Image (cartoon, rainbow, N blue to C red; front, side):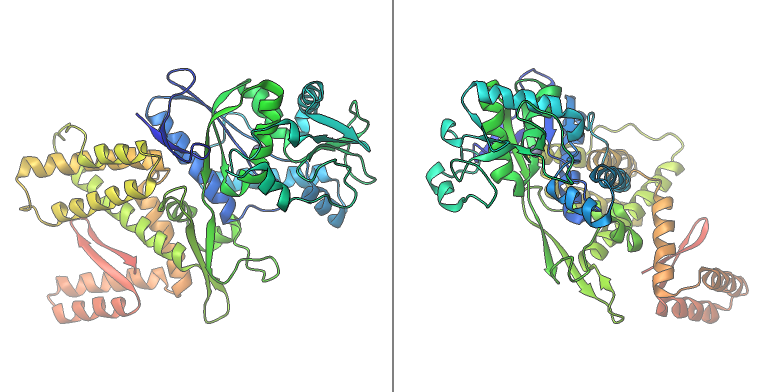
Length: 487
Ligand SMILES: [Zn+2]
């Protein structure tokens, strides 16, 4: 049984899909007017993990994540750069796809773009008009919130409370401050489409009602997005979809925000941490680990500081990368151990497997799940370090189970999916550049030390090791020779 926190119910509820064994899910995607930053990464990774876990638990998931490619910001960017809005949107949609791939976020089953669904939107608006929930005014079309008594139910606000905070902007033709635009009359220099109300373009919210209906039908299971979308976007989606089709999402899930400690992230400070910027200095898998190390609904921290040269540095990301390094090192040791067994046992699921699935079944608690992984790896290292820590058969069986089950955990979380050496070598190369360590000179020192040991010059060998240590290079002697890492 999977429990999830439903925003509208304000509590955890049991997931009971409309069709047993199948889950339909719609998540609001990105408005493509700029490069994605780490805040976008958080929402994308959160729902990627949710989908991975549902699939791992045997659900047949149909996952739709839209791309908003017509919007005020895209139009403004196009005007500023002197190119068509459609070109701006295409460019940043492609950039987003590449960034998401880097983060290990799988593409959704369907990634509909707003501009390819204008007729669907017009259809929803016509239905709303027929039901008295929409009215045309000055070439625009507005939703009449007074006609939808449940308005505010998702965000837990009454229409009166909401009314107090709303106002009519200059140039709007709406009758009441809470009403919102479904269709906007064409303005010079803006993209527009023909419609029964004259040329124009869709309002911000209508695309999700139209595209979720097109791909998931009148009603579906889960609607998700970042918690900043609860009001007004999702409230308006509900008013539109329930108003037009009488039903909509059964459950609402929202991921928490990313808080920036230290410096505030802003365009004017020039310190916006795009996914690309993070990838220049870090492995994006460590960004992913940072983001899932807290529960998806809780606020997560991403701190920005400056190094001596005034360059931005990311202490939380450094820490996450170190944890990932520990995970991969442990995995590498586990693999090496299993590789030495003539006939590896086939143990039952480990405690790690059981506890991880329990944590994830309880509202996708990745924080607890990663805690279990960490505990299991502490145990693994203890067993690997000390052949007498447990009876031989038990030790072999536990370590074999952990090597296998850690990969099951990694598959759901979207981490530890590379051969450990690949991650460890690339991280070491990056750290060498950052700390100005020449790998060639490390290798020759290691050769020198091996020669000294062969000649029984142990003091000399120890001095070489200590010299490397002082430069941040740690040597590990193993059956296959000496390896090294940057610490
Ligand atoms: Zn949406």
